[in-house]
Image (cartoon, rainbow, N blue to C red):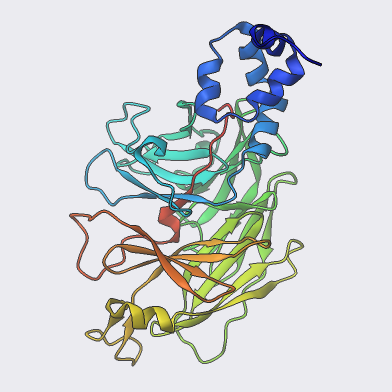
Amino acid sequence: MPMHSSSSPSVIVSNIDLLRHILLCLPVKSLLVFKSVSKQWLSLISEPIFVHNHFLQNRPSIPRLFLQKPSFGTNPEFEFIFLDGKLTESVVPFETLTFVNDPAGIKIEQSCNGLLCCSSFKSTSVRRTYYIYNPSTKHYKIIRGSHVKERSFLWICSVSIAFNPLKSPHYEAVCIWRNDTFNYQIEIYSSKTASWRVSGCPFPAPNDIFYTSGVFWNGSLHWISLRDSSLYFDIDQELLKTMPMPPIPHGFGRTRIEYFGECKGHLFLIAIYSSSMTHFDILEMETDYTGWNIKYHVDLEALTIAYPGMVRDDIVVLGSMSRFEFSVLLVDEDEEESSSLVLQIPNNKVMSYDLKEMRFKKIHDLSTCLHEKAGSKKYRWFDAYQYKETLASV
């Protein structure tokens, strides 16, 4: 229906459905500004259904990573990697975290669908403060568990966010406590009720399993261990369950976890059985937890030839005179297009390895870290966090 151009803005503003459709196409930064246009716009942009639809419509097809640089100060710095190469200073959301004046500094524990779980950088477990922070909106909430202290659980081993914005606008923070007999207790903070509750009974677990935050996938938080049973915590049922162990070939005495993470609805694991190995498999967990399946075979031999700095001839490891230096930061799964493996190699280079075409390319040069030792790996998979914009409330 034709209309004069002078009347177009008023027509759009008066048509809520049309306005909602336009606003859904805008980035979070613009929407935060437009909240101040009117009470109507504020109400529309703040609606849970709008937040849900905006996240669904604006999910990046290519992951963006940020790395927490090693630091001896109280304000760690961060470096961003946009895997499509479109990285400019104007789109970097933050370089340091200064949302709260914590004298111990801030350390990121986990990233989950746009929300960050942070903690006091230089505090003991007993005195550590935890924060849930949305870097898009700049809003944060302090969370402190306290119920289990009466049961002699005094050390916090892990705090993780479980947040699925496609299912609910609310999140849970799952805290793992430990006592001096190495029994553990789960306590949950709910953003819906703004309260804590103790979940289940104390339980034993491998001593090394809760050294990182849990990986959120399939409605559960997951912790991996190659020494004993791996565990996952079903959020809805509030049940701790055992995750199947990966198939480890016989004859290898030492094994390390090179990668354990989620991307686009897939849970991946890479286990390295020899420090001189350039051939390995990427395993994917079945959604019904029936076991790990081999998703990709990886061959990095061509990469080591192109970048001989990956080969260390001065170290004898497990009887081999060569050692290949690399670390996996992300397994990016894209069933319609190319899937890739993101690696850091020596000389601060970040490479993308096409898992289907078996080709590689450099995508980023990391800034030099003054405290990095020559030849040492700067980042691991638990130092690399996926970044997503969200309007979610904390």
